[in-house]
Length: 143
Image (cartoon, rainbow, N blue to C red; front, top):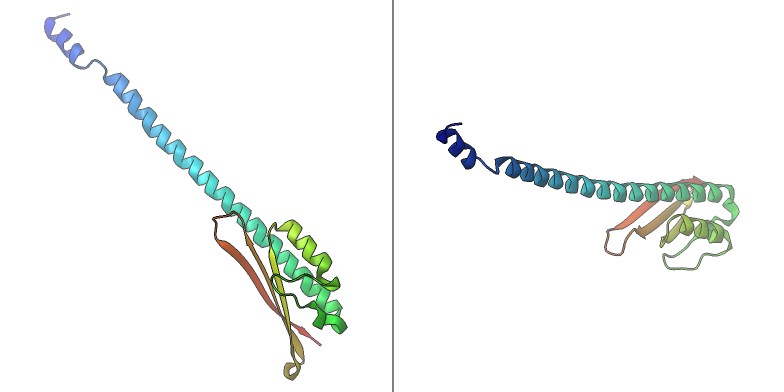
């Protein structure tokens, strides 16, 4: 080995280590991004599940109200109100499926159209500092 070749090896010493360290840093950044995306996907999935539960709960209540037309005026519930006998089971079932849910039901008689307008609102917050979610359904029930 000549002196010139030995000098070239000394000048390039540590390049492989530098390349390996750079590859590890790039891989670490990619893995951190993947973990962050996974956390956001989990949060979105949880919100979607609660929206589905809210949809099922509102549709169930509309079905119950349609079958109980003589007592439809008793299905009103203020957002922080205490549910009466007609709404008690539905409210407890909905709050079990959606923790911390605030429920409201408004029934308005529309005699000119021969129907009732029913507004059902389910509001919840998944975490303390997250956005408030609201699922609102308006339905018309014929007399």
